[in-house]
Image 1 (cartoon, rainbow, N blue to C red):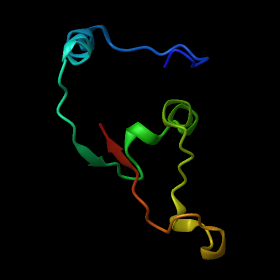
Image 2 (cartoon, one colour):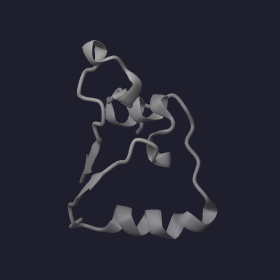
Image 3 (cartoon, rainbow, N blue to C red):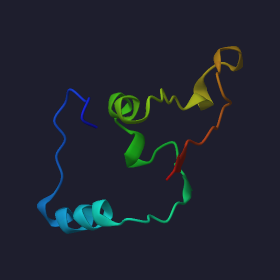
Image 4 (cartoon, one colour):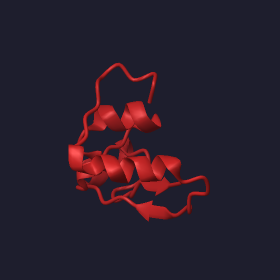
Length: 78
C-alpha cells in the first residue's frame, strides 16, 4: 500500500484489530467470495490500486462485451 497516491483512513476503534493482524506471524489463510454489491468493492478505483483488479458487475453488460460472465464473483484469498 506504500505505492498508493491516496491517503487511507480507518476508525480509531479498529486500530487494535489492525495491530493484532499485523503482528500475527502465522496468519490463517482463507478464501472468501465477494458479492457484487458488497461495500468492499464499491470504490472500484481503490480496488484497482490495492489488487490491480478492474471489477465490473457484468449482469447488465451485453454478452458480447463481457470479460468473465454475467455474475462473476471476485475471490479474496489470503
